[in-house]
Amino acid sequence: MAQYQAGNAHAFEAIYRATVKTVAGYVSRWGGRATDDLVQEVYLEVIRARRTYRPEMPFRPWFFAIATHVAMNAARRKRRKQDRESAIEEAPLERIAAPRSPDLLGLRLAEALGRLPKDQQDVVWLSRVGGLTAGEIGPVVGASVGAVKVRLHRAEAKLREWLA
Amino acid sequence: MTTLPPGLREALVRESAPVRPQLPAAARTAVLVAVACAAVLAHLTIEGLRSNAAELGSMPMWAPVALRVLAATALLVLAFRSAIPGMWSSRPLRTTALIGAPALLVLLAEYLERASGVATIVHGAYGCYPRELMVALPAGLVLAGLLARSYTLHPVFVAVTGTLGVGLLADTALHLTCPATNASHTVFVHGAAVATLAVAGAAVGYWSGRKSPRRL
Image (tube, rainbow over all chains, first blue to last red; front, side, top):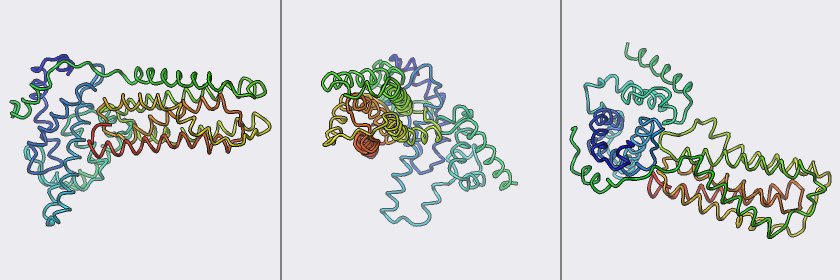
């Protein structure tokens, strides 16, 4: 990222190649037919926000905070559009629908994830799909490391119970 | 999918000029505190030290100044850190900041009244309100400028925390110059200026979040 800030466009391409599959899996949580557009929007925002990254900071929390924000905003815009158009009941299911990368999660797991409280969903997605550690997840979701670990533990206990 | 899509490639070509990373939160706080202190000194030069400074004594005069500056610095560091993606602080810390700032003002007001022994009431003292806002203006503008260059994912919290910090620094000026020692004046007139700044910050943060969800 520091190299991209210094003007090396190839460095950004390297970031893209290294992260795009993870980002695609991660933003698929918020679903929608336009997941590829959403992935592109994430990277566009990374480009716009590049001044805010400092080399001494860990990269992943910074990156996933932007990805989360972009995806949540897109989901909110979509929900508002659906509310305005009085969408049929089939639409809400898309919010917790299976991810576009079925090799990542089965439909049953995705449904179980959708039943978790939102704060537990956040940490599970960031941990298991984004690959972030508890220390990296904390500053993304606004929780201490201990709170993140507790949420993860509770979420995994529930998932094990539901999927048993 | 590992090659850049055309739209992204165009954006990369447009935005490939080198950029300097923004200053760390501590550096931006230092800049803002320096501007605020200059405004406080200017106000002190114009208005003069409060007439009952000698009667109050050193501790009631200067301890509140130190506490306000320390608290304001902490709030500004928190605001600038929170303005960076991936640096979102925990809920207990955020709650402490938002409740602690007004609580500190009330506690300091009570302390000053008790320390003075006799509550000095100044008639027609509502002029303190616009004066405190004027003292806060330079730092407020610098705060807005610094945050406008950020990529803020939580604009309301950042704006409120930042303006509370600016407000506390401006409140220092009025503590140094206003001779009133009754707690009700300090809380409801000086404190009202701080509250006005926080509300204005919240409004600007909310509006900027609606217009552009990521920037203040």
